[in-house]
Image 1 (cartoon, one colour):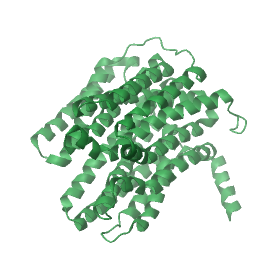
Image 2: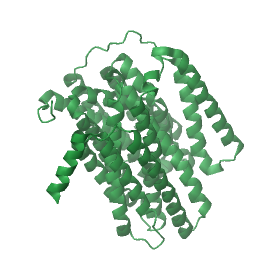
Image 3: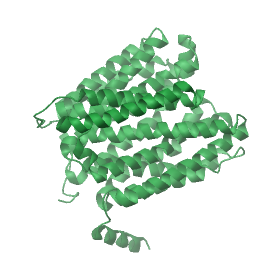
Image 4: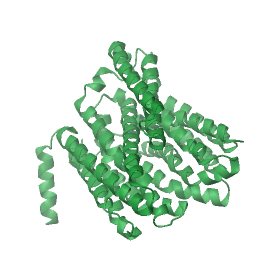
Amino acid sequence: MSATHDKLDRGTILALVAMALGVFVIANDFTALSVAIPRVEKDLGTDLTTAQWVINGYALVFGVLIVTGGKLADLFGRKRIFMIGSAIFAAFSVLGGFSPNVEVLIGCRMAMGIGGAMMWPAVLGMTYAIVPDSRAGLAGGLILGVAGFGNAVGPMIGGLLTDELSWRWVFFVNLPIALFAMYVTQREVTEAQVAVSDRRLDYPGVATLTLGVVSLLLALDNGSDVGFTDPAILALFGFGAVMLAAFAMVESRQGDHALVPRDVLKNRIFTAASVSVLLMSAIFFSALLYLPQFFTAVLGYSALESGAGLLPMMGVFAATSFIAGSLYERLGAKLIVSVGAGFLGAGMLILSFLDVDSSYASLVPGMLVLGIGVGLFYSSVTTSAVTALDPSRASLAGGIVYMCQIAGGAIGLGLNTAIVVASGTSKADLTTGIGNAFKVDAALAAVGLVVALLFVGGTLSRETRLQLRGHHRAHA
């Protein structure tokens, strides 16, 4: 059936609204606190190194547990896991807002990461389940579009609340949004009974994967500060590698109830999509970190101005994600994912030529190209990965793809930071280092583009080629 015949009824639309709100509160929370950290330091009497764990602790727990959250959603019901995750997220948001010291605040943020890791894959699974198969591209575009919008407005919302009320309100506003999303989900989302005969959770797999990923992420995060040859960092890398090797051995013996079942690993399209995400994610994370660094250190922007400076990229990212769903449905995964990967690499290459005399206006074209790439690539590659597997694996698939995004971003940031730090500390040195790091990211994008062209989404069909030829002639 064509997409034009698969119209969405009122209940489905309301359910999608609930899913969008769930995604928004998670995505917004990733960036809203970034501009409030200086006020947190002052109010709670702590230093920057400790205060940064308010952000890092949330991201670390979220990235590590998201695969487990996806597995739980597939085993016990996505709606149930979403409701539990939302309740955890909302409760610890309120407790975080009342934190008397930074230790309590970091603990609350880590607990919020648990809630977010349950919500995100459950949202993906429910979203793809409630729309017709022909509208899967719409589902991916909606989720990633809302995520982009949440990321984009997060610094502005956080800055406004911090300046006008208090940084604590960045936490308090999560409560009404989460409650409304839960209310609409409870009313409008009807989920079929989960047809799973064996609901045993792969505890050895969860433990080894968690320990392995935590060790590697901690090594990458701290290695940029103390040096990657530091004995403690090398020990973390070694332990992480051992745990991931143990995870592979454990999974081979767990059979059908493995955390990552064998049929998932053997699916060529899913694996290719995950690898391409791993390669491309260095670009997005590096741009989010080092463009504001350039705005602040070279252009003299404030924290709020630096956050607003990313709007060309983030706004186009959000808008393109919504459009990408329609393009995916008409032209297929391979073309849209590959074009997105190409735009990502091109945008980073354009930005890599920045210098100490670059104006903000000169960076806008590169940010626009990068935003188009992010919007086309992430929504489409997520849809390609999730729909490549059996529908019963949807939440797990979404969790694995997002973990690849977090891991790729962490590895890329570690590599980029090493390049930037090695360049020196002056404005000119910083600019040179950022440019060199962005060129490395563009090279990684080229590899990701090759993976997408060769393996993601199968081959271009004859029908798609004819459609493209017709579009070309029409525009000519």
